[in-house]
Length: 254
Length: 254
Image (cartoon, rainbow over all chains, first blue to last red; front, side, top):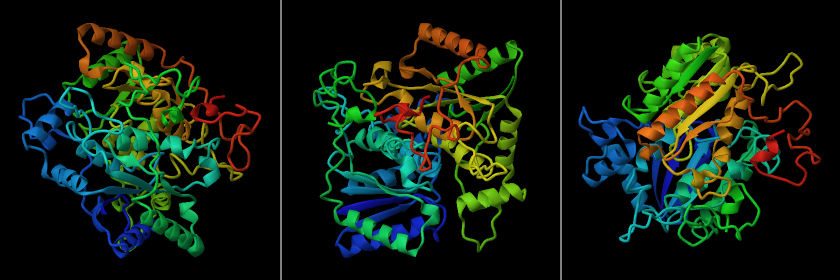
């Protein structure tokens, strides 16, 4: 497989960097090809701006429209284009980051803000005008694995933990970003109590990461519903007979 | 009241900027004081780095510890300190942004990543060593109102909408960030179909915003449970008799 590994940690001597190196070694040993987007090392700019789309100085910036036009007309900023090309090249994406304030570090959030332009990450229609998202789109058929470290202990991120269920915390990424753009999200790999990891815990974590790399192509993706598969009505609301009487993020699991 | 208005949109001729100006006028007319952090206008740097903490070049960056030490020793970057001082000054925070990929624009996410340092936004303990968070901490007693624009229609963000319930999408911000740091989150103000807003819709939106500004000091906050109020056990799991048999973000509402 061809794997794009996106890494977002500011310290090359960190737990995250060690795990990244472990993962990349595993990929090579298993005969895969990879490319690495090490966002801090690249000095990645995460801030959407009019410069991204080479807009005329007087033109009002409307992000969606401007990004779609720039994509079509070949005027997207080269750093955005390079990332889009890596995504097109890849069969799978690994997204590795420390969880900060229950989300991605800004440098990584801004990778999506800038790279997933209209016409690439969203706003895709088929020849009949049907909107392709949630399981369809430019990136359909590819896989995505989130690998993250969390300072807190596992119990606090469980179904009734004080920090909220980690699966729900990751819903905007797994469902709202990966799946929205067509990428099939795998169950995330979460390392808890990351600030207190000793040698034994690290060894266990590295093994677990290797196991997930080995099964990157075969692990069953999270079974989110597709938008166009008939489960949602004209208002994009889940039909009443499905997950009947229930609400919450899990109703979008088929 | 003293209000800190945090604004994160790249275009001063946008719907968001018009709503911001409307809100700031309302504050003035109602006799409140405000400060504005217009992140794009300030050219705010959202990327956590070792420079934030004036670390020695050879020292390994551990973000939590380094930020706490820099805070204590007065070595935090001046731009971070300035935002912390505004927060200390304020009675209420308004956080205004367009929802991008089901989260904040990177420039705003990185405002939290950098400003909510250890010892300020988290890692606060009382004299007995008890951890103060989720309703307690440096910012306890202050209020927070999220004001956001969303491209999609309202039905798609409802309890069974394809995009997920907006209340759950905002849980990492409302509960995991505001409430974690002590800020009492008010029900968010969400403007849907923002890309298709005509004059009539804008007028309605502006009125609704003014109404929310008028009631900024009196609106009942979202009733999230406190961590130390007895609702969670030693593993920080919600006690079984509370929201019995249920899971999901709403179990943290008391």
